Length: 74
Image 1 (tube, rainbow, N blue to C red):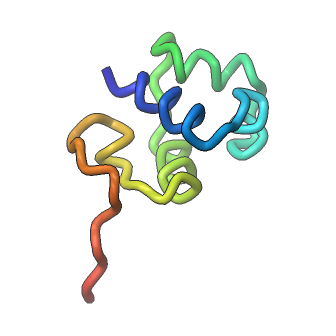
Image 2: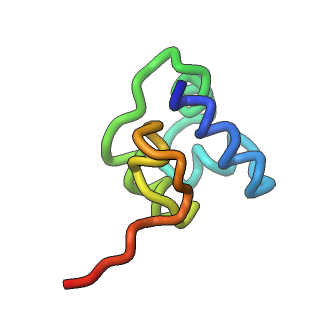
């Protein structure tokens, strides 16, 4: 499930749930519920986390196993 990726990304970055909650501007308990799959992660939060972890929202949501973000060619 994709919410496991939230925990994996956080642990790999050596962050606490409180630190990630601070990044998102929410309470730790709210973030914990996202990480445990109790509540769905909002799109705005996925975007912020993808930028912070330098990955894609597709990776966070489990649509790809490729952790590196897409290359942007405009």
